[in-house]
Length: 78
Image (cartoon, rainbow, N blue to C red; front, side):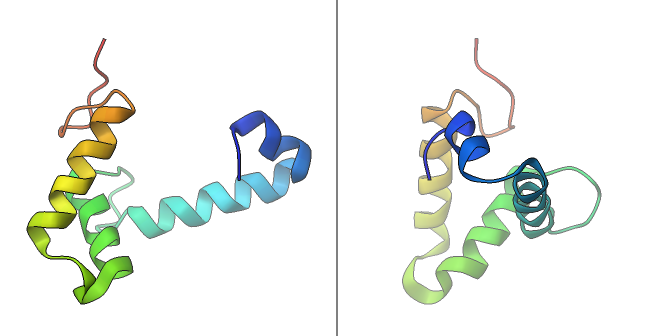
């Protein structure tokens, strides 16, 4: 898929907005307008099914957040 700028050249802005909206809807599990750690964990649970344990999903999510510069509380690390 590539980075954000390559997405904008591959897709129109409306398509990118639609993709972002769909991803938001998928992740905002409790529909409160915010995406929390638990929301993402629930979405990951829906996507992985029985393939991963709850502990494995949590470890994966913590590692992904760490790699992109965020903490478990979804706060940016400076």
